Amino acid sequence: MKASPLLAQTTSLLVLDGFSQWLSGHDEQTQQLQPMQGRQALVRKRGRVEAYVKFKVKSYGELSFPIDPRTPWGEEARKVDLSQSRWVRIRYRANVPVVVQLRQTGTHGGVHPHSTLPACSRYRTCTLYFSAFTGGETPLDLTNVAKFNLALLTNAPSDPYAELSVRSFEIDRYTP
Image (cartoon, rainbow, N blue to C red; front, side, top):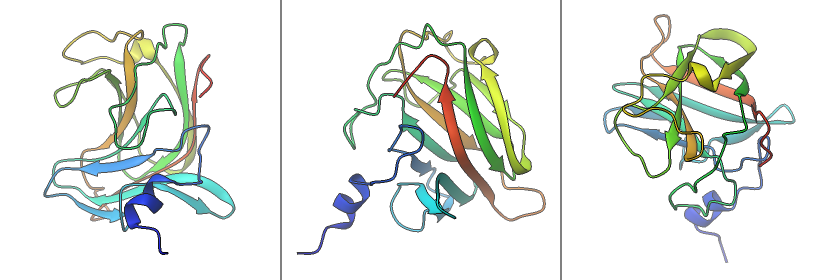
């Protein structure tokens, strides 16, 4: 019996730093180039697991994951308390700036507390302190967070697309 594409997508054996649900998303006019099928963005490249997305952006393309890895596939991201954490550290490469949003539990759409990573052509490690996450409709409440979104809001000036690859993601004082 052949597994359905949905079942294959929801039972990924790939994990990046304890997180297995790295999902792509985008507006209706944005064209998703990677992943070529489905939403699971984890891939194996040269023997290592990475989260990889590529879009022809009209409004936005994004890569997101629930902080609680026990969140069932296809369900709302579960509430997590990160009040003892001070930062996230990410190793990434992107041809455009990346807006890193920390989403409150159950909050969709709108403006979320965020910080921005610069575009970089080679892999780079950046530490973002939660105190630098600003601009949300409500102040960041680290006792009630659910997921991270990494948003690509434009195509690169030199490329007709936006591309992001994440090699590691660490949350201070949090073990998935």
